[in-house]
Amino acid sequence: MRRTASASAIACCLAVAAAASPAPGQQRPADDDPAKAFFARQPVVRVRIELATDQRERLRQDGRAYATAALRLDGKEFAAVGVKLKGAAGSFQSIDERPGFTVHLGKAGGKERFFGLQKFHLNNGAQDGTRLHEWVGNGVFAAAGLPAPRVAHALLELDGKAMGLYVLREAFDGEFLERRFGGKDGNLYDGGFCQDVDQPLQKDAGNGADDHSDLQRLCRACQGVDARREAALQVLIDLPHFLDFLALEAMLGHWDGYSRNMNNYRLWLPASRPAVFLPHGMDQVFGDSEASVLDHPPGLVASAALQIPAFRKRYRERLKALLPLFAPDRLVPPVKELGGKLARELQTVDPDGARALEDEVRGLCERIAARHRALAQQVKAPDPKPLALVAGKPLLLRTWHPAAETEGIELQKRPTAPGAALQIAVADRGSDARRGLWRTHVLLAKGRYELRATVRCDDVALPPKDQDGNQHGGALVRADGAESERLAGDAAWRPLAAAFEVGEFQRNVGLELDLHAMAGKAWFRADSLQLVRLPD
Image (cartoon, rainbow, N blue to C red; front, side, top):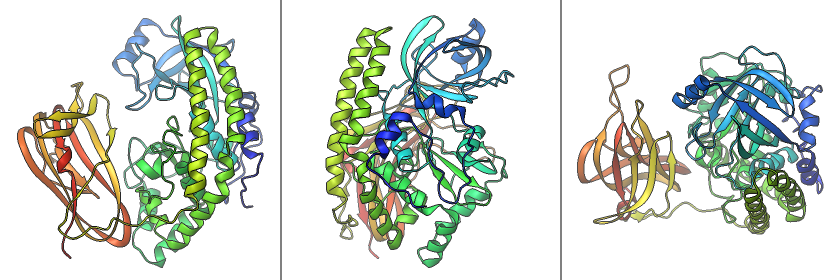
């Protein structure tokens, strides 16, 4: 049955956090879902985590490994559960700051559940002062009939210290697959940090083969530019779901999701059904009211699908059909209602934080209205055209976005002797290599191109060679997978270039300025970051 964006869908979904409908072709979700009633009442859960000294030190040394903690959830005691720190470059904080947590009730052998949940997340909201972005974003997906994790809120106390308001979100695990798809026959992949589907993604759940053969089939289907690709994608991808997924990511301004940044997503590849992309990490939505929904996305599957004229036409039709979900008179009232409830709860432990939250919620409501106005214009606008480059005439690339792939990286725009430069610095030298990038993407027509930059570096220490004896790392530029030479140690300003070719009639191409090192800094001169079309 075709999904519709009815007038009352978003208000109903946001108010009760209803479970998402299964995507077409998927199994029905399990009817027995005690978490449904829990999320429906929009709870603010009182959570207390207590760590023994050695377990706190364990998280201090390795926050990504589970430690054992005592847990209290709304008065219910759990003597021993697993907790670990969570968050990426923008949201990760240490155990001695204001950390986010993954909580696993069964990690220490316990069999109990919390409203049917064995595993859930407590997100610190480091990049979302409203603590409502994920609730709104996942609610919009659910209102459109797409599966998405449900969201509640919590007041957290850690070892006797009030930590304030957190976002409580159900986890992507085997139980999520059972709840949403009625089974786990397949593989649920974690997109990791800025990894596309052509990488060996980490498997989160499912009982499918562990050889990545399903990912490889999907990648092969994205190759080529003829009718065979169109037919292959329609078999391997739940296309109606996927086009809505792409549209909603773009309409929410989820710049850090799959289609725009190959980040913050999960991919469910059932054994005998089409692939389903799942939204994740929507803590920065509605940030740019003018963010384009018409730009061609760089994500491999997104790019392959939207290069096909018939799919592009359907995508544009879905933008119009989904627009009512973003109407302020439907989104703003439930946001104000829940925002007020959260502020009242937070007032009991942090009066200053409650006042700040009220200001943040007002700002979100204003951004929702501004976003709807921009979307109403964009859905009627013509499609963007590829950059018109004259062979041999450089184009200065002015817009770059920072992306730290590991902790311990700083990315800043810095003044230098020749002028401004984009800097990548290893700020926290450790036992593992650090990596940071500046990224952009451009829509290009068929042809040969070259990305150029003038680069210097100081004290860049390369990572150890891999198990095959290959040396990686250094400072370099990358365009569409093609790489320039690598700089290491101390290097004066030097021109670098990466040449590549667009074989399709047009394609959105990713460009990167990269430092991968144990230590050191690299600078990329802003006035040298140029794209050149090469003679045919």
